Length: 253
Image 1: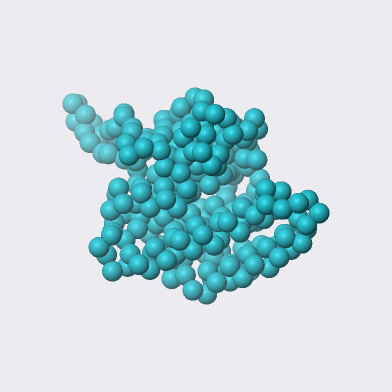
Image 2: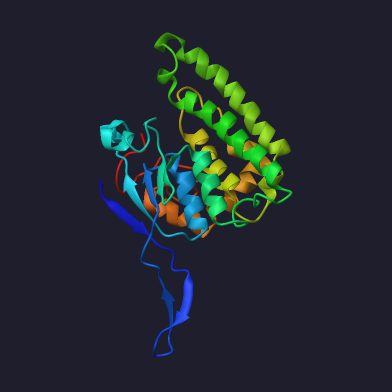
């Protein structure tokens, strides 16, 4: 597996001749194990938002890279993503995002002693424990039940997920915030996947949800979304009107 380095040109300085230049930190202690248009996208967006240098290693799903011994040694669940950190390898998307936010206190999530922390944790765990697992069951029903019961499960999940989206639309105050947060970097890819993946009739049209649609438009206009899109071949309107990916390496499925 080949590592690739991603560094923001974020530190402005002047060179010896007095001309403007950008200084780049050339070392990184973070490695993101990713596959295009997978849950690693949530982490990539957050890393880009805090301008933290990181390298990526492709987990090639076309050859079941997530099930290979070398990857299972880092993530015994065989799921994507994994983030290698100075504190060890972290898996579970919500856990990675919270760890990263706490490394950059106040930038992506309320600090541990902030009054807004409890509200933020409530929504982070709702995304991680309620919305994300339901989507996973929708996309990979064969991992949970026998083939002859898949249509019934997906029908029930479409109804459940529509209720989840309505819940977000009605009750999530952070949808209207202008600053990026780990709640936003977690939700935006899930909106994308909802519009693209899952067997049967299309169950999710983001345009039917005014606040979710406005949130998706704000997210995809950010530089971090453009950079993530170019890295993973996601196209232009990646959250508000997504199309299937055309990644430069690896496979989304």
